[in-house]
Amino acid sequence: MTTQNHTDDSCVRCQRTLEAKTYEVSSPSGRLPHCLRCALRYPPMLKKSLIIYLIVGTVLTAINQGDFIAAGVFKPLWSGKSR
Ligand SMILES: [Zn+2]
Image (tube, rainbow, N blue to C red):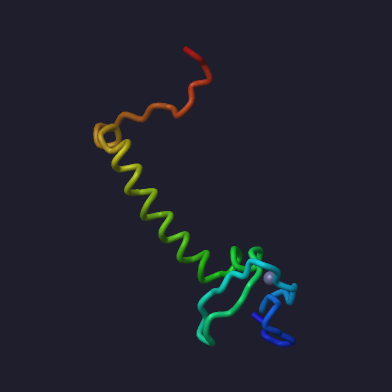
C-alpha cells in the first residue's frame, strides 16, 4: 500500500478523489480512507472475510444438511427435472 501523495479527500491506495462515501480500514498506521473498490480488495479484510465465510458456511451446512451428511445420503442439489 502506498501512502505517498495522500490527501484527506483521496483514497490512500489508488489516490482517487473520495466523494460522499469513504471506507476506512484499520491498519498498523491507523484508520485509512479508501474508496469502495480498494476497501473491498483490502487483503486483511479479505482474509478475515474468508475465515468467517468458512466458519458460518460450515455451521449452516451442518444445521441444514447435518442429518443427511451423518447418514451418508448425498442427493444431487439439482436434478434437472422439474416435478
Ligand atoms: Zn481506491
